[in-house]
Length: 414
Image (cartoon, rainbow, N blue to C red; front, side):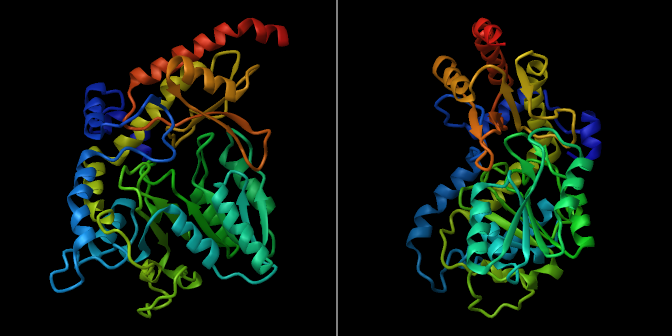
């Protein structure tokens, strides 16, 4: 949220606890859940307006010929167009000549992590909370090109901006050339101070690259305020767009430092953001629905979305954090907030808790274990706009019931 909307919800068009309004939003999305789904990290249900747009173009996308009657003549083979890039640029706060359309966040991430110019012996900084695929890309490159990878030691759970910056300052070395971090650590909900990290990196001549898969459409942000050199995101999670769409942002003065995954067959200049869009033929019905996706989000309002997502998290976390057996991994008083939250159940295995919750109460949460450190484990929730307060309250009551039932065995163990 912006500072204003974070501090005063009366400035919002719709309050985060206006249940009548948010139920009407849910009805435009009609999620096809088979149970109460409180984990929305992989994808969000696209609203009807986006689904209908894609459906209306499926047959056309599969049948037309490339001639003067080309129905998508404004779109390149990659699905991008001046209109789409401008819509994304306006929504996320960056010049359109710094936005490239991609098929997902991973395409943008792979582009930068593989394409940023590095010499043997130079170093990339990451964190143990980076997405496993991101780390796999870096490790493959390290093996192939004799590049060094260092993982910044960040706390598992709440952390202040000062703690985070101190960790990065200690990790940066003379050969550090690139820092790659997630904007939001999904499992715990920690939002990294991207602007401060970027300023620190820029003072040392280091390129800062942000995985924005869980901040685009979730936080009320502007790319030109973040100050990072690169940012990649998908549009099918918190923007509720079609799967198979995303974007890559690179600052104009940094574009020439990154090689595209595919050589530009149209000879785009090295400083052109469009060189990253020449990926071959894609299914154009998907990016063609991006205008409808943008309209859906604008009608609600990003500040309003962000406030609602945080409200859903706080509704369960504020009740459970005082329980003697719950250890929150999330600072719900920190700003900006998200819908992401994590906790540990003392005296009960996370997998067992999640299994009982699903089998007996038909509620799905995520039991997780960090791949980089198996001691970091817990329960994760990430409610989305299609979730209701009734579902959140049912989760709390179910959790309290499970804890009460296992109280005696916990006491004996203690």
